[in-house]
Length: 98
Image (cartoon, rainbow, N blue to C red; front, side, top):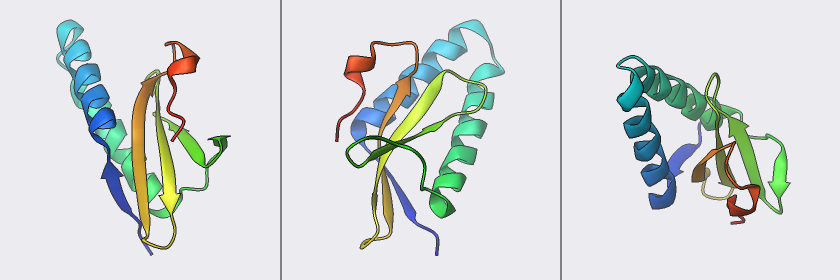
């Protein structure tokens, strides 16, 4: 059964900021980022048991980009809630804690 992906406002803003940043330097990079982000969402819909980072927060690295999706799973509601699209080179103390 496919789980529904719910993107939090924080994650949506981080995604938009990443796209805007990549658009400053390349016309192809934002398109590639979006494509790999969609691929990550498809993975989360069916296979979401990735490493637990903190309590019930898990992460999935976006291929070829220095970002990871931090998310929590609600098995009762069949949802995956994306908390953050965190840039891996940033201060690790700012990672989402749920």
